[in-house]
Length: 385
Ligand SMILES: Nc1ncnc2c1ncn2[C@@H]1O[C@H](COP(=O)(O)OP(=O)(O)O)[C@@H](O)[C@H]1O
Ligand SMILES: [Mg+2]
Image (tube, rainbow, N blue to C red; front, side, top):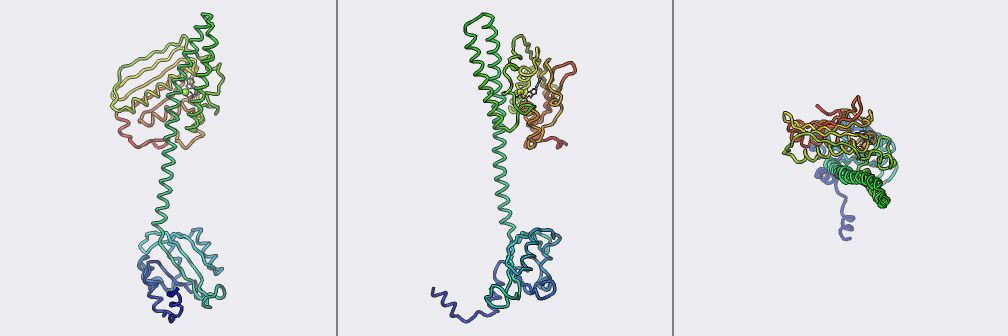
């Protein structure tokens, strides 16, 4: 309190002391005179010159707008103009430029200085502009926003991967158990066994579990797995039952292929697994032929069935559809998308073809050293060189 009363009883600070104080601060200060043509700058502090790179002579007599460079279309400028016209205080964020052309974010406070000392309204003598370079602060805020986006994206990718593993792993295993159970029920019926009902009940439970696994997979990976947008798990049971394993011939052809990169082996395995599962589940095929070989350094995987053929709109050469395009993904089915996704991860090409005489061929070609050359560089549709 003493100090406050002291300062109140002190003689008024001289204009010179006040001016020295303003020159000493590391904030830009300008005074403009609205009574002169175009409201020009009539005073600037030292830091204004130091920061912007303009000499005092270069700025006195000019309107502040030269700081905007060619950036005249900033919405904040309209607010600033309106406030000056209305004689009100305002705070705006502007993009300004130093003399050397380097842009900076200007956190600008403009207030009217009244004719009457201490008056809150009445005639205006000057405007005072106090400006602070907020580039670093805005940069830091952007950085935080960017990091937050990255965290979300990572979590999203992780969920997507987990969903795919659920679909391709547990989902496929349950589908396999279901098919074996159907076969078992067939045998039990032939033997007129009293256990047929129990086995049928177990099959129902397995199919329910498969449905749950697929629903969870879809929840984790927002891709609707069926072309009609409803999902395989919700298809009538009978349809799946019609594609029973009895009498289906499954052949494998090829050689032992060694992989230096275990990722390549894992993804190719999952691709083959999904293609075989589709042939068994959807194609009503009587034969499925799987071939794997390495020729001239590149690995060739092919899964061929003689079933009804994949719907034309799902077939194709197709690069991986960008993940953002959910509608496209929903149309394509999660299993098929998963195959493309995995192929893309290891730098392989994937073709799903509907044969003229029926049946489907899924072909995946992994070029020599593909994954190594594409580490951290996932190509997407339209981005291939
Ligand atoms: N080998 C195939 N023969 C016939 N239809 C197929 C074959 N592979 C896939 N399809 C069709 O493509 C759809 C999408 O397959 P997919 O993405 O694997 O999803 P899901 O197997 O979960 O239904 C299947 O529902 C099916 O209609
Ligand atoms: Mg499938």
